[in-house]
Each structure stands twice: as structure tokens, then as C-alpha cells.
Length: 59
Image 1: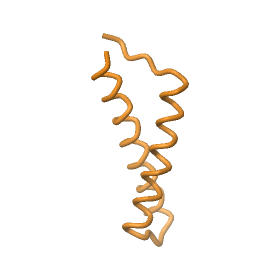
Image 2 (image 1 turned 45 degrees about the horizontal axis):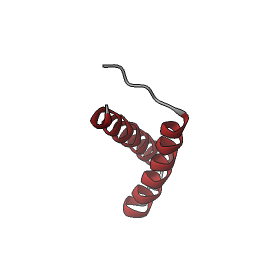
Image 3 (image 1 turned 120 degrees about the horizontal axis):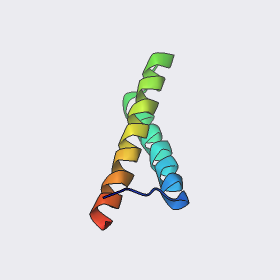
Image 4 (image 1 turned 90 degrees about the horizontal axis):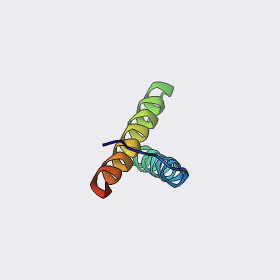
């Protein structure tokens, strides 16, 4: 079973990552660049995982 990521999936990953970063920034209010970097990384990983999970369910 191969997972194919199309342009719509990439747009969804970016949108989820931006929304996740915004929500994490509002919730935790990071004060250092390391905190901002960790939150952005966590949001990107969560967005990719969400899109891959949906692709696997629809496959």
C-alpha cells in the first residue's frame, strides 16, 4: 500500500501546521526562539501525521 501525497494534501499540511502553530502559541506563549522552534516542529509533525492518517483511512 503506497501513500500518494497530492497538491491538495500539501496545502492541507501547510494549513494544519499554521493553525496548530497558532493554537500552540496562544496556549503556551513561548518567550524564546527554542520554544517557538519546538512548537512549530510539533505542529508540522502533527499536521503531516493527520494527513497521512486520513490518506491511510481512505486508501
